[in-house]
Amino acid sequence: MTRSITILGATGSIGASTLDLIRQNREAWDVKALTANCSAKELAALAIEFGAEMAVVGDAACLADLREALSGTSISAEGGAQALCEAASLGADMTVAAIVGCAGLAPVMAAVEQGKCIALANKEALVSAGDILMDAVARHGATLLPTDSEHNAIFQCLDGGELADIRWITLTASGGPFREWSHEQLASAKREQALKHPNWDMGAKITIDSATMMNKGLEFIEAWHLFPVGLDRLRIVVHPQSVIHSMVEYRDGSTLAQLGPSDMRVPIASCLAWPGRMDTSCKALDLPTIGQLTFFEPDEDRFPATKLAREAAHAGGAAPAVLNAANEVAVAAFLDGQITFTQISSLVARTLETRLPPAPTSLAEVLAVDAEARKLAEELREHA
Ligand code: NAD
Ligand code: MG
Image (cartoon, rainbow, N blue to C red; front, side):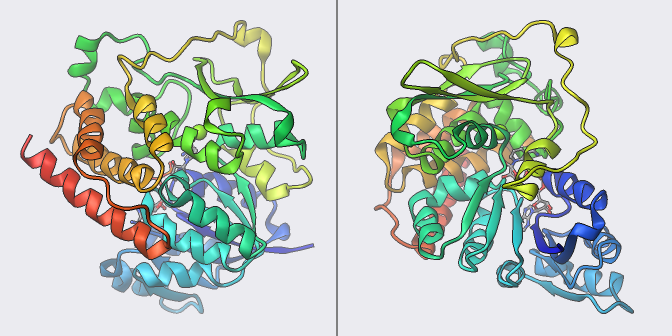
């Protein structure tokens, strides 16, 4: 049976992994819409290869290039933030949400409103608008499948079990490239060093988030919304081999873990085929070669980001959206050479300390909190 699919963020790392799986199962999928921020030529080539109905660039300034690259085809080309939501509203059976950042929130919400299946990689959407998004999922009868490897692991370990039976959910973290670095070394960490993740090949923003450990902080908040066992039942353990993607411990003392290669095609395939399974060409897990699995407590002295995220979750209201917005500004500033590596977390902390707007109660209010927090973080950065 053929199912229709839309990929939001088709030109990124998750988008490429998803399209790779579709390429190997062409007859199973009918591609409705593919989106990108700009990269018009790349997007057009993908839209042509996969016979998409629609291609959308989020940046309207790139629409002319997209139209030119698609001229002579019957693929409709659109541009701008609203067009991303239109692509998400085409009613595909499956929408893969793989835009990076809060920019993906409104399109994710548009997909949720269709009441179909959403494979969610875009964790920032859930961090910024957790309750509002989860309410919409329930209201519209949508199915939200976690694609982030840790959350996909937890989802698999839960396998329909009762949340009340859970003692702990343990998110594993690789610890990133600077796991063993001292305070002094971290203070002078360079962009190129931070962009080299030991285990995973990902987009630039999440790679920096992995180096600061903010990725695990965002994932902590993501897990809190997806698996509402309460904040005091969620914990993080550093596991440098990234073989165990996360674990669920039940009240009888039994712990279930999901293991796999560090290849996002595995959790994406689990979403695409859910509730069944599909073949992938991913390398099998070679445990004798890996040899050892090790575990450590996170060091929140050197990596304060997980503490900031946990505190933002406890504070609730606008705090997670402010945390996320400030982090997006800080990561962009670091990638741009404007701040140092350790200033990423301190800028997030200062933004949270400066001003917390009232709790948002709608998508529009979350987007307003996000915009305001970005402005504040920019000001704090300029006057640092
Ligand atoms: P990426 O930077 O490789 O790709 C991002 C995609 O979003 C691209 O198609 C880009 O064109 C598009 N995009 C960026 N800004 C946009 C905007 N303002 N408007 C519209 N489109 C925009 O990122 P990625 O690594 O693929 O990550 C995507 C999401 O998945 C992130 O939220 C990330 O945290 C999450 N995630 C990624 C991985 C991974 O292995 N890459 C793993 C788990 C979760
Ligand atoms: Mg993850």
